[in-house]
Amino acid sequence: MAPELSVRLRGSEPPVAIPRNRIHFLFGSGRFSYDCVTCGAHCCKGFGYQLRTGDEFEEHVRRMPTLAVFAEHSSSPSDGRLSVRNCPPGCFFLQADNRCGVQVDNGYEAKPETCRLFPFNSFRLFDNRLIVSPHLSLCPLSIAGVGEHRAQSDHDALAIEMARAGINREITTVRPAIADGRKLIETEEEIVRLSEQCLDVASYSEFAAAQDEVWRTDERHSTHDRAAAASFRDLVVEVLGGQTSKLKPGDPSLTRLMVTMTPILRAEILFPPVTSADAPISPARATRMLSVIDLVAEFARASGMAAMTYHTITRLFHDFKPLLELLSMLDHEVAFRDGDRIRWPFPGPESSARRYLSLVRGILKSGRPGHERALGELLGTPTSGELLERVAYLKGVARCFTGILVPASSGSRVRRMGWHHHSRAAFQRWMVINLPDDRILRVRH
Image 1: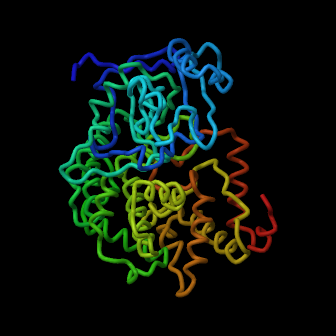
Image 2 (image 1 turned 60 degrees about the vertical axis):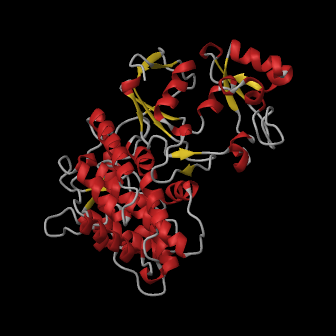
Image 3 (image 1 turned 45 degrees about the vertical axis):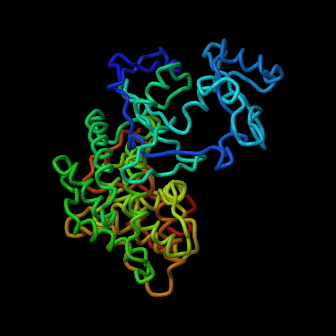
């Protein structure tokens, strides 16, 4: 590919040109494919698309003059973007055979940007670097087999298409999980390459150990070997109260799916929007979170799911994300970020609220000398026969703790806030430690 290729981000203010060496694809080149006709063109049914004002919009109106009724400016008339609001059951140009009428009549290049770049149009921007991942929903991406290469997801081909007309949509600016954002991007690209080499690993624990090995020199608390990754998995099973006897031996297709999707999910974890107020999650914790997802996927398979797909994993990731964050710290001492108020009341029955209160108290006390205890020890193990109640309780805890609970060794504990925020949080913590349960339970906020 020509080194001078660049992608112009027209939606940025001011517009910027991103050279090819600053475009980072956080998924394997040629690893995914899709078939719009087979899937029923789900993305074309009621979700709309964007157009550039000028030639692109005029061409669409020439084909369909009344289309202008359904177009509106995305944010302001001066930004050069229009949103077209189509309705179920399908796009104005969707044919009965689930093919795009614009593409059939005028070729792929004539499609609007939204449609041309989808599903590889999950964009993030940091330090004039463009991070590219597949969309997590709508498109049921297929995973290419070992040794196969699909042109639809070839990195160079995607870069050429992005550069041809530029990108007009507004792109989310992100805040990398570590201070050295450039190093994070480069190391995550190394994990992309690693995922291509590990498609035939015997278990996801083996690949988790390999991910930690990439970060070993930078994170004191990484787990460096397969035994440690497997031990963490056992701890998760113990805390969840899962029945390992129900789990089948490792499924190579599920392991390959998880390995392939790992760089995509890591990007979701490690590059949050700059507007996010949650504590950043370290690369080592990201590995732990994905180890938990692999385990949850095995539970799903044991519960009767015949096939595990791209959408299975993205849905589990979305639905279980707070729980993943919680369980990723099981073998760490943890603490609440300074200045953050503990969420109360607990969303559950009084018995669960008392357990939650005891857990919060244990976390606050574990920061004192002689009281150090890991989160897994504080959570305890369930008694037999209470799996439903146990998991419901853990999900409630995870939702309450998301964004405010961090490893005690983390530099994220200190958060700059006004004095009134700190004083209210400090008073709340004093109450939890010093007042009896019954009195605290009567406090509603």
